[in-house]
Length: 244
Length: 291
Ligand SMILES: Nc1ncnc2c1ncn2[C@@H]1O[C@H](COP(=O)(O)OP(=O)(O)OP(=O)(O)O)[C@@H](O)[C@H]1O
Ligand SMILES: [Mg+2]
Image (cartoon, rainbow over all chains, first blue to last red; front, side, top):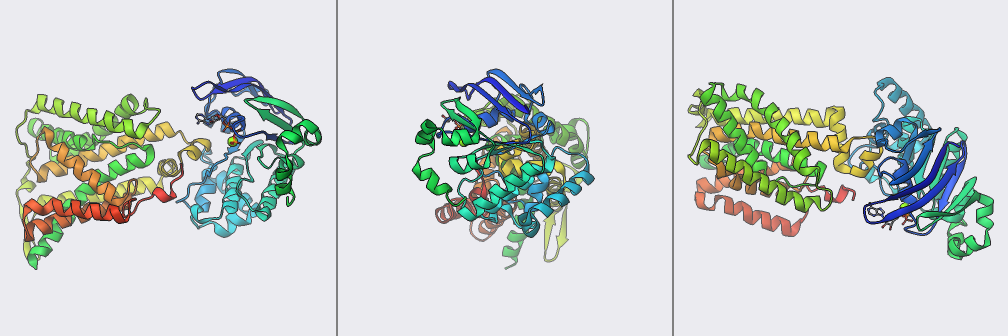
């Protein structure tokens, strides 16, 4: 397993939000976490990224513990996150934003090389390089965020609700980019509100509820689990996902 | 007409010094979301440091900045760590209380060490005037303005041409995202506070060389500085420069043409009008800031 969470308990000071999370992500796969609002999905990411310290429990990445590491140290291990909310620097150019993805790197020629590779992959980055990031549409901003997170050449990418607020066409593009990332050999852990679409994209599905993992397994199985589909994958969700 | 011109020129020159002090205040707000009420007290402290160095060690006012700027920088970093970093919740509101307390403490210490007497910084160039076009300008105004321009240019280079500057701008624009790409935002905050306070060493020297001061001069200063950065829009650096010069020009022209009594009143009235029309200030960045 590339990433393994065992009995992770964490909170923001007012009671536990994660109440014993067990989760495993296999190398080279897409794993999708679904669950109702407030289940603690984003909190799992915050804990993995080193921003929130778990109260107890173990987090192993490539066999080594991440617990107690700073966000910087987690990044250097090859694990990056694209958060749920806007994470670009609106008054900086697209190029500056993408370059900042390599903030941790000292080797300037490596940064230039990575930037060239990434702008070849992302037409948005190429075409909008000198525009202010804040002037881009929501979908374009998402793609720039993806481009930025690849600057460290990560082995595991955490994507928190990548489809949020996107129209169906942009959503398809974003999902295609996720598949491309996987084909490039990266492992992906994503949270998706658009549960059906997310699970179809994924190899593994994880259902979270009230700070715990209710169910996990191959995404097919999660998608077709009658109890789960009644609870989380109701008709309205499947309608939204029809375009994807 | 020449009176108006003189008011404008003096306003621009003194406005440069205010820009220096306001730049520190608005930079600190941008990065840390805190309002440093002690900024005025730091200016006065900087002025007293220059005073002490020049009276007791006979160090020139401008040369003394090579001592006072680093000292104030270190003081800023330590105070940030001691007083600001522990504020985890409601930090904007709490910072007003904490830094107000800090201002009072600094004022008390200055009374203790320097008494309540009026002080002014002296050097050969503080009493000279030189002819510029149709009128004479105090040489110190020109020197203080030049100092401000040099330091603001250095600040610009720091912010827009260095990696540290990038991390400052990133933290200002989106703190959570800055953390996620590996910027040590607490370190950035401490250094930014240090830079903001270091600027007051120069601002204080320039202020003290043009205006007599006492330990409680900071009340007047901080209200002017707050007006400037609110007028400009909190967190806007360019705005702070324009607002500083604008405020001092308006004050000077009013005072020369009308009466010194009305000088700052006119500016405050203008401020109220502008805030009614544009609550985010003239150059406010609130709209583009996240969270
Ligand atoms: N920074 C924070 N400080 C305090 N409480 C928080 C914070 N972030 C999240 N919480 C709380 O933790 C719980 C879980 O939040 P989290 O964001 O992890 O849920 P989520 O599953 O990602 O929900 P959503 O689908 O809405 O994104 C919620 O009750 C939320 O109010
Ligand atoms: Mg969430």
